[in-house]
Length: 185
Image: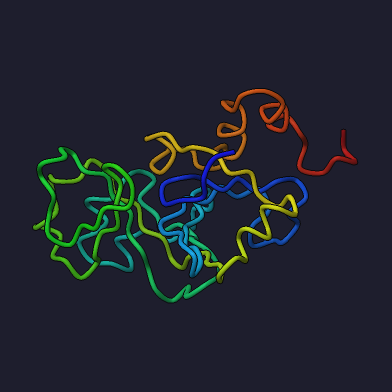
């Protein structure tokens, strides 16, 4: 079993019926004994980043829209970025896992432009209290799997759930072909 830590993915199992999380893929940004925090990677909104955050539309990865990061603090935003070079860490960047990190949206865009190979902005986030996520994993609501660099900045985020499951070893990959509504099978 993969350890629950920053940088791993939570993939909603078919048993998870909560509309906030059904068929989602979540990148964990922080996880410790006090709880966990992550963002939903596969819920793009129709809202252009340039319409709500001046200057940031020029540096975000395609599609250049806000993503629904989760049901908590939806009036706020988190930016996730990946470094272009490990020795060129811009002001306002905090490492999460490897070259992936959080970008402070109060940082002037010109200070980070060119230092990041990709940026994605999320409205809201998903959060769990102490031991809550462990309980949800134990009850079968989440698969915990490793992430790969392309997961966060995938252009076609709508197919991410199936793509992540498809690359898993063994029987877990079989779930990638499961229909959303098993009664339609």
